[in-house]
Amino acid sequence: MKALEFETTIENGKITLPETMSNLDKSQVRVIVLWEEMEVSERGQNYDPVAVEGALRSLHEINLFESVPDPIAWQKQLRNEWD
Image (cartoon, rainbow, N blue to C red; front, top):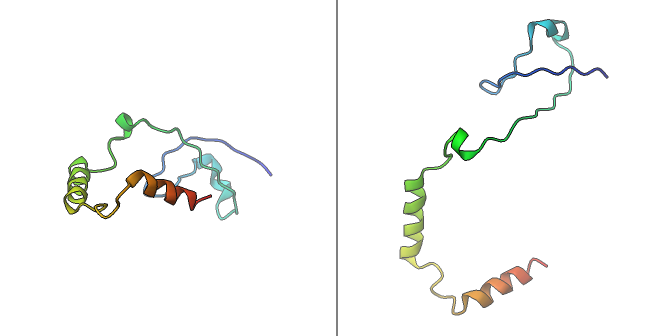
């Protein structure tokens, strides 16, 4: 098996091979994709903070866990089920 390394940008889910690799057209290849993790400040937020806040407020308003008399005991019981 031969290996060739190059860098490119994925656009619309497609990887474009360099022209020097045109002889590989229609060849079966194995692809390994490596990328650098970006910090949140580099890639921007992937959620809408206003929508998240609204969802949390809605959960608070419906008092979802009102029927749980001892929240700590309830959480411990749930975690014990995982063991």
